[in-house]
Length: 512
Image (cartoon, rainbow, N blue to C red; front, side, top):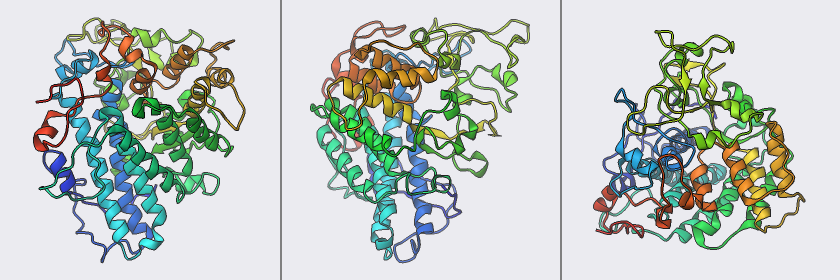
């Protein structure tokens, strides 16, 4: 995606009513935009759509929506540190599945998501009102898809949410909550209509079009929605999920990279093999950033990777996640545990007193020592360019490996395909890439575990655990009891219900 100097300021009444305060989407003001003076050509229009992509990237990665997609699962934990850092009772409550409507982390996630939706609504209205709108059909479709993505996350986290498609709301007629099944239908309709106007990877030069949505990016989201349709609507859509996967497979434009790590390197900007959709990052141009290394790694990694900053030692994973991998599985090497060394593999990575860093499982959720909490090196710092603590690794949204695993599960659950394959073969293709042993038979538990291994920290685990039921029946580390099924939805934030009494609280949570 090209970076334009033209800036977009959106402060819609939609945002100000559903969220406390009004959010300025950029630091600089370059004048007001109106249909009479703007969008005279595609470049001008695209500059505003870029802003919606940037807003969605903050929903999908690093921010609170990503955190609440990972907190509460058996692959993500952020313990409070003995030094006093990182302690947040809101996060601990999510980890323990005791979230209340006043949870601040969930409240911020709501704001992030509905800011993206509000931004998309404002841009969409301007595009549609432009005198040049007849020539902007593809960009209008693109923006509808971006808005639908925001609603997908809202539906996934909260179920029944307000459905708003205008930039400004009458304060005397605030929206109520729309049932989850209706939100699902709205998203599905928006995506199916938008995809007709978008180009396929087979018809664009990917190097110049990247990383904008293609048809295949939308098929990937639809495949994910259909895979979870029974959770969202009560009606399974296994064959529909497979159909969307087959549309991607049939292009013959995607395949697995040599290693999983290849998808997350700084050089993944040139990766058109496995990545189906992603967000372009260029922190030196004030165009997004990747802060996984800042938030996840131990402070001593400043020495190991010669970083221009000291990592904050926050994001960690559990023993349960580590134990899912076979020793020869290449993916296990992305998890850091045990004695740590410099990149030469022999020089101990040590504290100033000479003690070698030995990473162990988290023992104390409230006051963990510096070495507690296994790390997931999702976005490697090797070869990364830095602007302060911001890396330039592009942020991956969907990969071809996920499509193979979606198809495998949907086939196993009874869906049909026009591109013949078996769940066992599809699972083994993904496992074979990482040198995991070949399975001779496959169960639903195998499929769940393979998704956990392959897609760790990519924002899927909570959704997967809910679909497989393990979110409720499973126990691990600091989540020691079963979970009531109503907690498959987060509570509508109390501050939103105070601002808009028409928002109905989800079942199981306090209704006052």
